[in-house]
Structure formats: structure tokens, C-alpha cells
Amino acid sequence: MLVAATLAAYQPAWHGGLIWDDDQHVTPPGLRSLHGLGRIWTQLGATQQYYPLVHTVFWVEHRLWGDGTWGCHWVNMLLHAFSALLLVRVLRRLNVPGAWLAGFLFALHPVEVESVAWISELKNTMSGVFYLGAALAYLGFDRGRGRWNYGLALGLFALGLMCKTVIASLPGALLVVFWRERGKLSWKRDALPLVPFFMAGAGAGLLTAWVERRFIGAEGAEFELSVMERILIAGRAAWFYLGKLAWPSRLSFVYPRWEVSGGEWWQYLFPAGVLALAGVLAWRRWRGPLAGLLFFLGTLFPALGFLNVYPFRYSFVADHFQYLASLGPLTVAAAGISGALGLYRERKPYVEAVLCAGLLGVLGTLTWRQCGMYADAETLWKTTLRLNPDSWLAHTDLGAIFLKRGKLDDAMLHYKFALQINPRYQEAYNGLGAVLLQKGQVDEAIAQFQKALQVNPDDAEAQFNLGAALAQKGRLDDAIAQYQKALQTNPGDARGHLNLALTLLEKGRTSEVAPHFQKALELGPEKPQILNSVAWTLATCSEASLRNGGKAVQLAQRANDLDGGRNPATLRTLAAAFAEAGRFGDAMSTAQKAMELARTAGQQDLAAWLDIELNRYKQGLPLHP
Image (cartoon, rainbow, N blue to C red; front, side, top):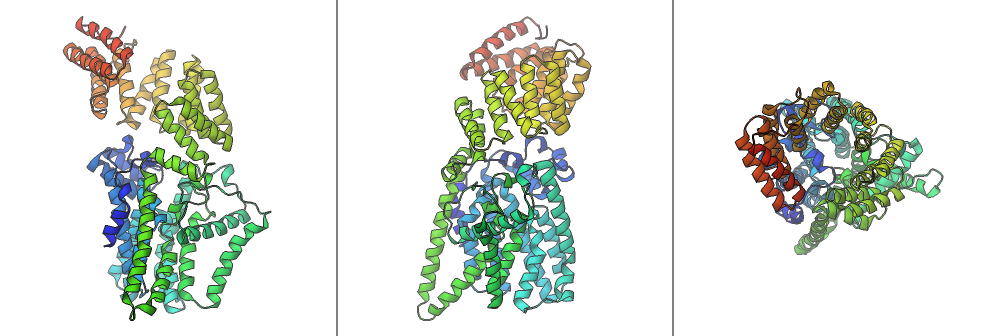
């Protein structure tokens, strides 16, 4: 029943598309090979965060169903339901009343939708299974002190850390559980066996914190907060999360970022209120509720503001931050409801069933509605702006969506809105510059890219874009310098190596071209645009030392396979490659197919070029001058 209810509540997410950073998680083209799988495990920075087990699952998922998203959603939903079942087992092992109700509350609460309906948050759903599985195994060890249970718990914990290091809080949570059960803690019995867990969690946490700063960008002006400001953020965030659990209204993908000020007296009420609540629970000796609060705060600690995490640039809170932490308050609530309804259990047994079913029905309906905003990226950001009109992140990402679709005026409008709200957001300057570049306003585009670099001189994307704009202006030396800067900042950028190679070729520095082509192919072995550009150069370049018909055919065929054989531009390259290799029959048939596809797609200019090229192939002539 629990699994069925979970799947039904999440029905709108069954076929949801990619949102925000999903394309960086669902195995980008450069990581889809066996070599890419090796990089996932061995190369920091190959993936957005170093969670190799999660990215291995994404790698396997892509092998199973390609670019389809339905399978990713079903994996997330089933993992979430399984975590709810594990929660029931853990609570029954601890003799906590209302265990099944707690499992249903966790499975159906709309606060969890962000973690389940967002494909990237496989990090949460997968780590949750390992977290609760390790907890269940360790409770078995605590009862019988068996080595098998201890080894299983430690192994599951290690696997969970490779999914998301937020589960490093597990040993602390277990100590809270033992204190609730026994009223005191023993060093030898309770704490000493958990030392390896603490050490593994601390090591993984330090690595994650470094990766957040080094590769993701969790540093800069937005993170320059004093200790007192971080305490104020933590107190307010704790109440925010409890409030959303109690009254899950206006749940948003991006919440407004608070203005934190030590000079505002009322902001001190939040951390003071947390301390007061803990004090009252301790004074009344309510170990169960106090344990729930300690579990909640301890599990939330990495996201309370004391550590830098990248989303703090946009907001200090996010629903997915409390995925595991919510288990504490939800368990306390379930135990309280179960105790209160126990008064009717013998006299009116139907009362408990009716009231619990009503509560779960409401939560399931809210979850079903909440899933709707995750249908696709455009729906997500438009819904976010309705709930949070000042979200410059939402404006910027909507701008990127419209830019990709060629709706340049709409894209420009959203980028400008973003910059009005946050004039220091370099991504919006980058996007606005890209719009202007497509509009042919190259000088204005250069100015926007330079503004982005004023905000962040090490922004590789802005350096790359500025190089492209300078190349369009014919300022090749300046463009080469910018591409080189971009590659110093981000040496793993295949596009950077490709554009640098093409610009060096245009400048006549042919001896420097081949290494950058090779690097681009190594970094983007499954990127059709990279393969197509290199193949075109090898087939049509005027420099004889660079022409290689056989290699051009190999690359163009690979690009054509990745494009599904229906892209006229890629087929044009393949035809040119065949001609350079002397295979003029293949060149003619391929060019003919490309010309028909171009005409069908309304690409008349491309069709006209293909007609000219087809006549050359009929004469037995390749395309190079």
C-alpha cells in the first residue's frame, strides 16, 4: 500500500523532463564510455560533485534507456518508497509508536517532492536507502554485537557517503537514539564502535567541502558571512523547515534569500527560540521529542549556514536540504498522533483509520499537485517566479531556455530582469552577451562579457564567450589570448580547445592546431558538434598537412550516428569527408540526402550550398580549394 500510494502521488513526475543541472548529472556525452566511467571514480571535477556511486547509477541508466527520463524518475520514486519502508523497520525495531504512520508521512509529504521529482537528487533518495539500511544493520549490531551486522552497517555507510555526504551525521544520530532508549551513553558500548563511522564521515565531509569551493564555486562575496550571521541563518532556517513540515504551503524551487543583519534585534529570536524549545523539552524530560529535535538539527547541520554550499548564492534554504532531517519531526508527529488517537482505539477503532487516511489523503494530493511544477524546465522556472518574483536565478535560466529556442527578445528581457535584481550575477551578463552576439551586436556583446569578468575574473565561460566575440571582430590575437585564459581556468573544456584550434588555424599558426583538435576529441568523444567541426576541417582545410580524409570520415560517421542520421549539417560534413577520401559515390548519395533534409526543414541556404557541393562531387572534386 505504501509503495502504491507513493507511485500514485508522484504520477505527474513519471514523465518529467530535465531541469536546471540535470544535464550535468544524467551522464554528459563525455562520460558515457567505459573511459568516462573510470573518470567518474578517479577524476575530481569530471562530475559536478564527487559522488561516484550516484554518477555510476546515472551511467548505467543511460546505457539502459538512453536519453529518456522516465526510468530516472521511476528509480527515484522506488528508492524513496523503499526508504519509507526502511524507516518503518527502524522505528519498529526501536518500539516507536506510529511507525507505519511515520513511513506514510515521509513517503507522501510534499516537502520531499523536490528530492524525488528532481532527477539530480538521486543523491538524496539513494543515500537515504543506504543511511536507513546502515542504521537498521547497526541496531542489529547493538542488540547482538555481531561482526556481520557491524561490517554490513559500515559498508552501507561507506556506500552512502559515495552518494551524498550529508549522511555523515549517522553516527551522531545513532548516539541520540541510544540516549533516547537508555537515558545515558556509555563510551565503550555506545561511542567507541562508532569511531570509524565518525572518521569516515569527517573525511568525506572535508572532501565535499573542498570540492564545493574548488569546482562548484561555493566561495565569493555571497559567502562572506560572520560567525554571528551564520548563527542567525541557522536559527531562521531551522524554524523555516519546521514550518514547511507543519504547513507545506507555497513550496518553491528557489526561496527568497534573506537579508542577514546582526543589527536587527528580531533576527536573534530565531536561534533563541531553538534554544528555548530544546531547553523546555530537556526540562520536561521529554526524551522522545528532544531526540527528534536533536536528530533534526544534527542532520540539517551541513545546510544550516555553517558550511558553504553552492545554492546559498540564491537562497539559504531548499526543500531537498531537509530530506533526511525531516525524519525526526515526522517521527515525533507520528508518535504523537498515534498516542492521541490511541484513546479511541478500543471504543471507536474507525476514528483512527478515518483521521489518518484523511491526513495522508491531503498530503498525497498536495504532493501530486507539487509534482506538476517539475514537468519541464520552463514550467519549473515560471512557477518559481510566480512564488518568488525576485528570483534572478529563475529569470536567468528562463533566459537560457529562450536563447536556446532562438527567442532572442524574450531571452534578453529575462536576462535584464535578472541583472536589475542582482547586478553582480555574471551568468546573466554571459547570457545577455550571447543574445547580443546572435543579434549581430558584437561590440555590445563584448561589453557584457567584460562586465561578467569584472564580477569574476576567473569565469571560464565569460572568457570563452569573449574569445568568440573577439574572433568575430577579427581580433584573432586577442581571441586566442582569451581562449588560452579560459583553458587555464577550465582545462577540461572541449569547446575551448576546439575554438582555440580553429582560431589558430585562421591566424595561420597551423603547427599549433593538431594538439588542440586531439584534446577536444579526447574531452568530447560523444559530442556531435565537436566531432563534426573537426571532421569538416580535416576534409576541407586548405592546409594540406591537416587534411585527412580517412579520419574525417571516421569522425563524421560517429557524429552522424549520435545525431540520429537526420541532421543535414552533419551529413554535409560526412559527404565532404567521403569526397576527400576519394569515395565520390558515397559523397554524392550523402549530399543528396542532406539536401533533401535541409529543404524539408526549410534550410534553403544550406540546401543551396549542398547543391553546389554535389556538382563538385559529380566532377570528382573534393571541397578543399
